[in-house]
Every structure is written in C-alpha cells, then in structure tokens.
Length: 101
Image (tube, rainbow, N blue to C red; front, side, top):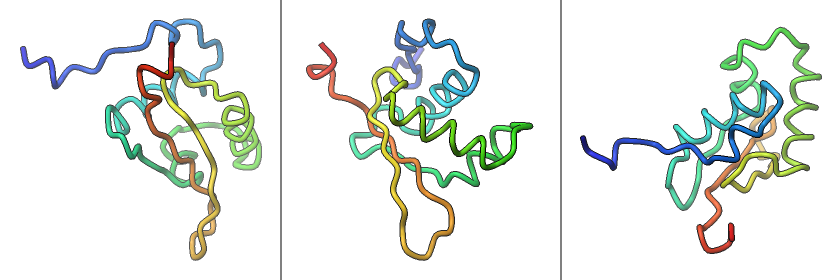
C-alpha cells in the first residue's frame, strides 16, 4: 500500500463532539491534507456540501464559532472576505508538527 495515499486522522478528532466539527475535519483533511498553503472554501459551498438542515445564517454562525475556537486539530482556520465573492471564505492550513507540541 502506498502510504502517501493514506490520510491519518489526528487522535484529537475522536474528542470532537459536534457533528459540524467532525464533518469539517474530514473535509479539511481530505482537501487540505499536507498542503502547506492549505485550502479554502466559500461558506455557501460548504453549506450546500454539508447537507445541513439549519438555516444558512445559523450554519455560518457555527462556522465562525468553530474558527474562533480553532476547533479542528492540526489545522489553523481563518475567515476572509474577498472582493467579488459574496460569501466569506473559510481558509485552512496545516499547523506544522513542531508547533503542535
């Protein structure tokens, strides 16, 4: 088996209690992986992809709270508003191993 194709899950993932946190961790892990520059998604795209039954406003508030708590193990999250894009961007990048302790 090619280990480069296997994504590991941080043990802290199993301590995440919220459904959105677990779902977002798996999504971030898949798309961001080990890319130093990370990845980004706009909130509307995440909302559609999540299949959430919450109102978009509530979903966006949950994302903002998740970013404020830096709730995803192994990743730094931030939100940016980019000119020309109506929906804010959730940006994430891996935290270097040395910085994680």
